Length: 370
Image 1 (cartoon, rainbow, N blue to C red):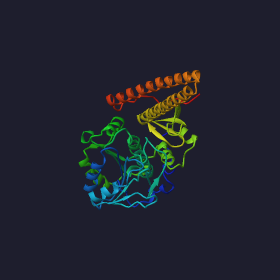
Image 2 (tube, helix red, strand yellow; image 1 turned 90 degrees about the horizontal axis):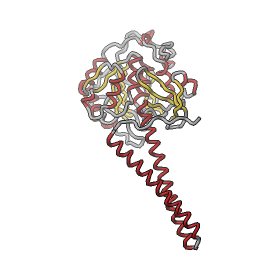
Image 3 (cartoon, rainbow, N blue to C red; image 1 turned 180 degrees about the vertical axis):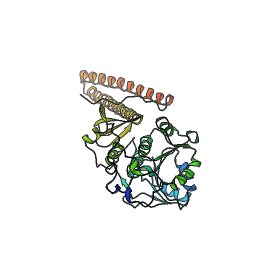
Image 4 (cartoon, rainbow, N blue to C red; image 1 turned 30 degrees about the vertical axis):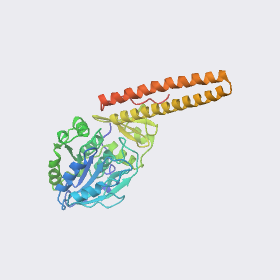
């Protein structure tokens, strides 16, 4: 897989910039991601950081599209840093925490914030990987990536992008929280720089903020980091671009039903379609499971409605002495009832499987039709 290209071409146009700096910047771009259980450690981190922190913090916590935008308010009450909900094209200011809005990806570009409604990644918008990846592309070794509590494995690919671009990675110690799946995925996949309890993360961030970062030109950004950062903004969404970073598979995207390409980030297997939807193997399997369940429930509804309608028509036929038609409709109703009962047993068995084997993938991606 190609991992090197022209350093100046691998970042935004304004990023051919390191040559004339009078001094090296510190690790002044901090990206933090989390999911279930992440708010409490996030509050502890931001409350422990000084208002004079010479760095900017960007935060993504998974939440639903209809969630009230309360996270910025919560963090604002917990510390001295300036906290605001991210707004597209805002200039980046040090000592400020930018929080992702519901149903929008939060991204970082040279000297400004981006807020876009791009394709979902790992079934989420906002998602952690797009933020981490965009920061790695724009700022390389100046980035500190922090992964907090959460389920599934969003964030692992983003940490890989940060690490591959010369940045620093920090993962919350799994024994420090209730939802360790995110951390375990990162720790099993990557050689993370620091794995510490949440109470120690703020001190690390402050320490790195005051340390000069390596020269950015020494860390060419991997090609897929650049292209995928553009894809989330719908700038690169054609088949040629996704083909250049992955291998076409016989599987289809559960979100748009287009073809999926397999991307191998050394030790992490991911999938992406050319419209931009992206999945880890685990999140793809979960999405497929939900698609199958929805299809089964839909079939159950149709069978129950068919049985009810057949019985109603059979009764009308009896009332009009159409005996043969009535018997045919009754047979159709009984057949629909039997099939509906079979589907109920499937759904019940799947529910028992979920309770006994939480987190175990139940299906493989579906194959595209020939």
